[in-house]
Image (tube, rainbow, N blue to C red; front, side, top):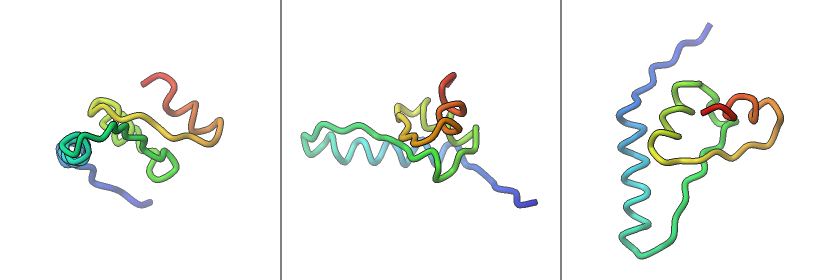
Length: 68
C-alpha cells in the first residue's frame, strides 16, 4: 500500500503565500481546495486551518469534509 509524507507546515506556508500574492495585488481572493485531488484527512484539515475552503462534487467528498 502506498504511503505519503505530508508536510503540514509546507501546506500552510504555500496557502499563506498564495493568498498574500492576490491580496497584495488588491484582489478579492478565496482559496477552494479540490477534495478529489487528495482527500487525506490531514491535508483537508490543514487546508481548513489555513483559511481555505473545499470544492466538492460528490456525496463522498461532502461526507469527508462536513465536520471540519
